[in-house]
Length: 472
Image (tube, rainbow, N blue to C red; front, side):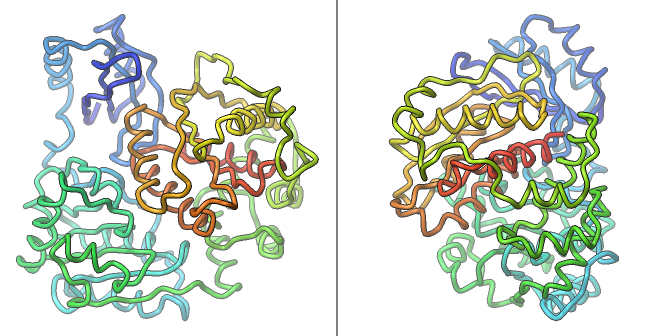
């Protein structure tokens, strides 16, 4: 076991529940279960942003038991934040070693960003400080940030995300870090509780001449309120726009990702994806991963499915689940009270729906379960939360969903998108982006069901594949 962290994570029926995260092997968890017995839940594998790969819940913990467990773990490994040899990380990003400058595809849309990044590596903390990189989804912002984190070493780099930083993740010895890198800073929630610490963090790096790099979906001028809260002026450094690449470069990027993640997707399949009416380049990383997971699922079921068939299943609408745009009252009534069947090896699932649509959420959840069985997907879920959100409130909803997932210990979330009559409907794309990135920062996978597509099978299959991609 390399490291561990014990956190209070109250459950709906257990206010003294703790979450134990470790980076190690299953045999380490087996020793913990053997030592502490009945208080232990079932260990599960996780892909946690802080580098942990195993999690277990400890129930009905007293102060004495917490001390006893901590003392036992301290003998095995240091807790998070005490490892002097580890790079500093925020709660939300451990970096991606496969995203380097060597495999960064340079083109007209990102040439200036690449040049600015190269200058930062050559002379950190000088002219381009802070470096502000912004652009549309999937233009390469996270790739270039991870490449910068690797290139600025050796030495401790504080690499985190906006949602993680706003959530108050433990950062270790911040004073030792030589650079601060924040992905998706536009998704950082500033509250009365975290504002004082955040207002000191960024100036502390800049005043010492240490490099600060942030990425955002939006230009600096759209983040004036955030600048004021953080006591920082992005305009004093250098802001560079990354644009959506051409179709040819898009194809190269998808091919490179497919090769890195092991997806059986060649240029012919990529071209068919690009030609599909439902293709959205901003989602291409998810689409490539869906191809990989669906292909693996088919193979595990003894079926040999061609690349063309995989693409067709992912991009086509699939079968209809109801004759109308919405399920009828009779269909809703038949699904009333539906809950997922109990399964021993199940991933905790939180469900979110627009306020007033609880009956529709039951129908959606029933379809979600049924489509998995039909597609041969063996992953099972245990519902730990079903909660409404206000689809007429454009601010703060995504953060509320993230906090609810954190409280409930959900490893996955199924979100029913806002209906066309709601205020959030016009911002459904930005809303889904925010929810997905905020949840990913705390290790929770997102399955998104657009309200406009609830009567066809495509989004349910995509949701299953997205959840498995983050939690194999």
